[in-house]
Image 1: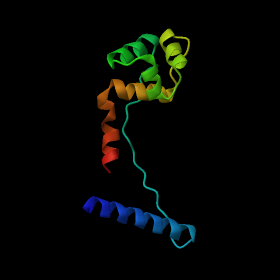
Image 2 (image 1 turned 135 degrees about the vertical axis):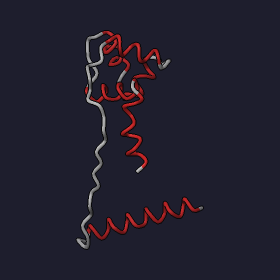
Image 3 (image 1 turned 90 degrees about the vertical axis):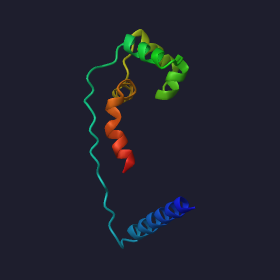
Length: 110
């Protein structure tokens, strides 16, 4: 029950702050966090995409679902007719290199 009470208190406090802000009674401060991620080192080529998918033991449809793209998109990545977007490349990098997720885990704890 303790966790529920704390959650309720936090939600209630947030709602009250939102209402006060809307009424002009207070200013809300945004918190900014820097997440240390390595730069994207390269574009993922057809063999790298296929190899990573196979290493994860996923079919193309399962892999497509992770990236919220169509199976045809995954097929085009693996055939080299298209390259993953920068966002998809970042996700590929985070899947491929667990060390790159350290910054994200620190942020999630806050």
